[in-house]
Amino acid sequence: MTAGKYLQIAFGVVVIAALIIVPMNFNRYGLFILSQWAVMTIAAMGLNLTLGYAGQVSLAQGAFVGIGAYSAAIMTSNGLPLIAALGVAIVLCFAIGWILGYPALRVQHHYLAFVTLAFSTLAFLVFRNEDWLTKGIYGISNIPRPDVFGFPTRRPLPFYYLCLGSLGLVSLAVWWLIRSPWGRAFVALRENPIRALSLGIDTRRYTLMAFAIGSALGGVAGTLYAPLTQYVDPVPFSLALSLDLLMMVIVGGAGFFFGPFLGAMIAVLLPEWLRFTQGYYLMIYAVAVILLLIYSPTGILGILDRFMAERRTKVASALRAVTKSKLETAP
Image 1: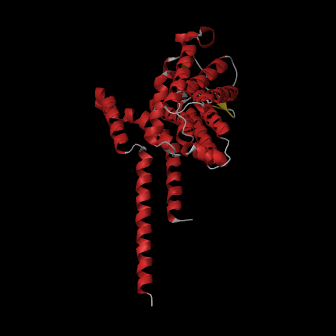
Image 2 (image 1 turned 90 degrees about the vertical axis):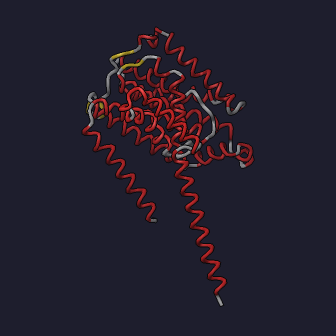
Image 3 (image 1 turned 135 degrees about the horizontal axis):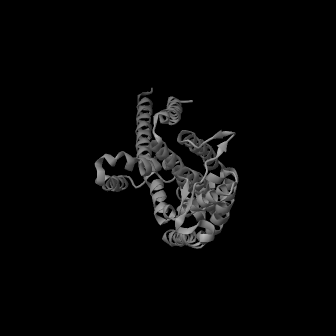
């Protein structure tokens, strides 16, 4: 194992330790913001799988977060455990995502974006108008927080650890997925669908799987969102949430594993850090995002990737020059 790998592992251990230890000194609001970051990161990871790895544009991820949130709110308010709501949300979002993937077999790019936009609008109207199920604009309140292996998570810190642990499990699952044959098939589908088909990859099935799995992760995020806020109404699940998640993926770096982590940090934490500017914080936040995307359309991790590629090129050039000089001076 190289020194660079050891350095990466050490950095990862420090970050994980900081996420566990540092929040112990946070107040209720600080823990809420960190929990929201963990939840939005899970949703953004699902969209990154669909958009960043499989290359399928979706503006419906916010709707799937809403489906998961309402599933959790309705079921837990009626005495069912959160784990049951999680199972229902995953199955429901997976099935709807699979169906929503069928238009991707016929249309691409902005045409596909319009199809998913229509679904997002439809889901929002259902959340708002179907009072018998969602209680409409009045929403569902007093959503209970679960007990995990007998330990209550009603206080902010234990629930933050639940969100962080869920993020860790989802991250391991996605890490395995993108390094499996499925993940390589998703990348092939994004880069060149015709070549992928010629290599024997079932592009139809993998397109549907990309939508379904990404949508299911949105449902997982929604299942945590409901007990986090303990109140669910239609407003948070409008098109704005889907656009925010899309921005998280693009700003962090679409197609990079850690892109959603950084993107969610920018979208959730940066506005809070800029509140000292009072009424100007949203303007500063918007300008910062615009300048970033002008400088690096591939996001924050795109900058790092470009730097590493240039460094590898320089090292390779230096090695070639040394080898060439040795050959020229050899007897």
